[in-house]
Image (cartoon, rainbow, N blue to C red):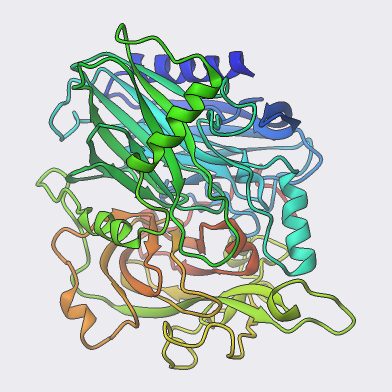
Length: 579
């Protein structure tokens, strides 16, 4: 596996070093993805791993702003699959968004589907991943959009770009892990390792050779494209003895933020400038470890790699010595796993660039406000069954006490054909059904049974929508990364405790709030986002901790067609998969 890891990293670096930093040309870019099994070894353990084109992580999709993209996905496994282009707005092209049973039926075995969409008014670092069951545990990759104009940040003379995709590795079959969780009602088995570009690093068994290394020259500026593709964990990331400068999040430029570390939730991307100012010999640690807010079991290990200055040092080859140096160094490099104060300070520091060329188009007034709780739940165990969750019950999750159920056919297709009966309803509660002390309630003594359904809400085209995500303390307070499909949004407010509809909006940032597609809702708190609902179709909102989505922490909304032909959902493609 050493050769594969080296080739993967070299391919990434050569690819990103040779592409122009910006391009005024636009064209049609075509790619072919084969979803297939590949034998992969990590942590002394060899297994069949689900991949795209036999690569782990999968191939990078690299396009220019304004390009039309066609990606043919061929399913070469026995199970259904779909691919989601995470953060791509899919304007009028919801058929290409990818979440199974939301915007399409899955691609069946031995069949293909071509995702067609245009990249409009977006530039920067995004990702793609499978969006069926837990397949995105290994089926993921970078999606890079080069801008029409030069980068707006200083240091535009970039030496090269280094993508670093954070992930998780299970020695077990992830499909079996998911099925066991759903069968027993218990929590899922945690991963066995975190990875940097698919490589765990020397702190794990048999992994000294499976270590990510980025070679750099002194006195240069590099772009680091950090992507959290982990299945169930928010992560801290840092490079020892180096300051990182945030210049973009979720493919939106930001005001520069200088930091020693970042917190990045699953589905989020952060683009950093790295200036290699060190003149001393030696390798520098690249490290990622979880940010923990849950009482559930978690993987408390650390993935590490190395930043190596060319012609400055020789690698430390002795496995035991390198492991010792690495384990000692991680304590000084990364925040503590429980450091909510750091995570909060970092999140609060991110602001939209808000320049004349890249304005912050946050809605200053709203047409609709939806307030929804995000909760973990305990469901009574059905009669004649044995459940392994807390107190002999089953774990679920909900939004406004509705645990989302995926229908047997695509919601978007049934909406388009006006055949919603027995598929979905438009009665998602737009405020919590019961008012209580959301973040102060006893974690285990209350009735936490939830309702089940495929409930959505609907807004007119062009509506200025506000959604307040209110955390709860059922089971425990926890940081939840919520992802909105089809739209970017502006994080106008965040706080701890319960949202106050009278007082908290007065403190909103309506000048330069960060624009994102995934928001980490503070543990034991709330987050308010505003959306310009200008993309017709059906759009999924869900927790990007896959365990919680499986338990039902999701909802959806519909944006109606606008009055003009250019404001209407396109016709479904001819090769759209059938259920």
